[in-house]
Length: 102
Image (cartoon, rainbow, N blue to C red; front, side, top):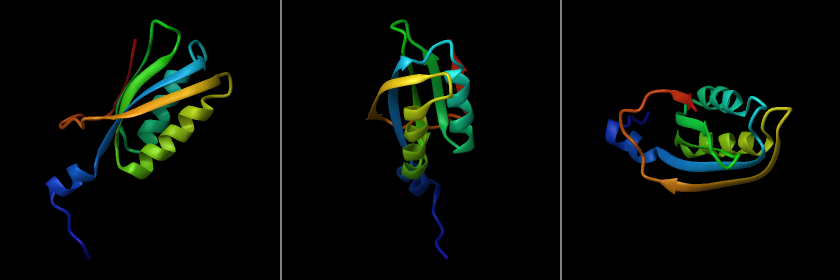
């Protein structure tokens, strides 16, 4: 049985910045994103952007982040996602939960 130290777990954690374009505001996209992120034990946030997109950051293990991005590409039923951009950013320590901001 393998035991991981706290530092090993932190190394395995990855953080992405994402931007979702299309019909993604006014269709419960942020709430959908929070529910999916919480279900995957991710931390971070999501918010509406002034250009009509939804953006945010998410942090967790690679497998969970991959699943999360798949959810972003589909969105809730009323959404019409045209594009999802993502890039790696520095991981943050001490963050708890995934939140929705304005």
